[in-house]
Length: 395
Ligand SMILES: Cc1ncc(COP(=O)(O)O)c(C=O)c1O
Image 1 (cartoon, helix red, strand yellow):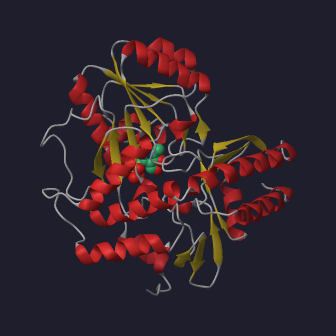
Image 2: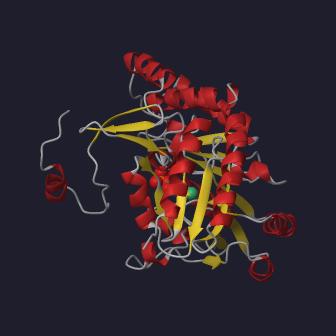
């Protein structure tokens, strides 16, 4: 499809202005690259916010979709559909949990988990979440979130939710007790500034969980399905959550999310307690199966672990040489962050000028989310350009 000249003006005319659009006119994607109408090529190290794990135009994903759409595109959830069952089986296998409920997005999977927790514990028990957390934009998910700017115009939000400081072990001791129904945790925060949970923090949560028996929910929407170099971010720690929420890359670019439960909570929902017209769409599920096949069964996840370590090490070197600008480097696998001592939107623009797409989150954290298929050469290219950008005086 051709863009008309005034596409950005038309966008403003017809769409609610909820998104700040990047001013490039994209024609198509291939592998780790995005191409524009005027023939420019961009290395996409943001992957559609961690969705495009296999990049653009992956043959297995396309073939799976083509085959499925000839059979049926949609079936109501009154009927079983094979792709749903096959994908659920894989999610159970790689998460180590028991059963799956499919949704269309991360926020819907979070909503499903909230309903499950409320049904199990009743309304009075409190839910613990953390500063800078991000769990989605619908009311329940928004209530769990830790960012004021997303919540301030939308109260009243859900009651009985207590926000603690991420990685603050003392606060866990103080606020988690027998009244705690659940703890929502991103083992590595994405939107919140690529923050990694400390070992001490997780082992305290583990010991408190043993004592008070709350439900531990891992939000793996961004960090799951191999992004951190392991199946899920919680696999970096000695702990297994009760509920796991996934979305983003699990649909191979199509809308799909899932709530995975362990065997203690899988029968909390009974027939009619929850549902979705589109949740677990068969086309999205076959695309997801192609992603699982590549990431787990063809061991792409091991490449991510190896290259991610290298990437982090090189970023730390760059940081050492630029300690007047960079405060911290952190992350796991292909979920990496560079914290600057000033807002990083100018750096993102510099990168764009050099044909590389990245993101700035939490004002001053450069968030790097390469497609999982990225190569050493792609990483070297990014690092070289980063060095050149930092050598220029950035205002
Ligand atoms: C950790 C996390 N949880 C939940 C969500 C919400 O997912 P969705 O946008 O699919 O509703 C996101 C989206 O960025 C996320 O990063």
